[in-house]
Length: 390
Image 1 (spheres, rainbow, N blue to C red):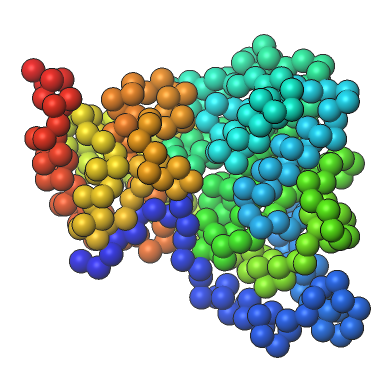
Image 2 (cartoon, helix red, strand yellow; image 1 turned 120 degrees about the horizontal axis):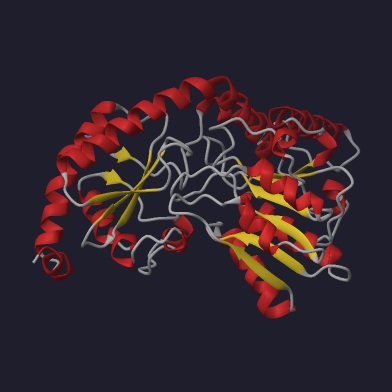
């Protein structure tokens, strides 16, 4: 069996059609979009066309879309930029307990280094936020609330619109990290009622190093960087024209495939979950079976370490993850699973399988053949598992 790649939430291969769309702006049409000569004007046209294409997907105005280097930068600009902009009148932020570290760490920085007040919204055992928990914490001093649309570890999808509605009642801004949602479910900034939204290309078969941030018209953001008038001074630096073109083409392809990919991923994921639970005892599903991105499957194998399972799978040419790629190598239980009240012994045994366009049932059958003996072998050496079963 050739390599089986089940880590699409970490990154994806770039679609050949996307590479083809980008190539002209890496070779012949290589101009700087800020230059006034023909090379620059050609690049500027490509950049603005890409902006219009991306804006059309998330249903915003092109002028509300700013290109960045990816989801992490977009999240940082959204959290830090709004906090700094309004700090003289408001210094309280609220974030979800299961946010990506690109949101968690800027928020913690604002609390520990800048004197901001920070509240964390709890989640239920499926990873979902109850709107009343936001009502209990939000105040007139709140400047921004950030809750991710789809979780990167469990795939759990939040009901964003009621949270945004509550936020706006207090004249605060609402940001959502849509990095794992864009291209997999419909993302409409008007329907979600958000003020800021982060996205990236490389999770959906686009190039690494390019993303975007939606900033609703009228929202003010303090710049984090200085050095030029690019992106209306909200994100200075020479624009990645080829990357922007690649992002636009990526989203165009994803939108055309959206329904078919969703149906196919749902069928494959359910087949895989049922197969694992039917072959291996003491396996626990993490997240929501109903409200989730279907291609994300988080399973905890009781009594063994997730990292050990991942390494053993790698020997069999199967790529999976024990959680977010941004925390690879960390042996502590995931903060996402801890927030969901998953017991530590199960949290440490979690493995994330994220399916993609190349995933086949034959590949999953291979995993279902190789995974049970791996788990059995690791459990045979585990004093924790033995003590549980005594």
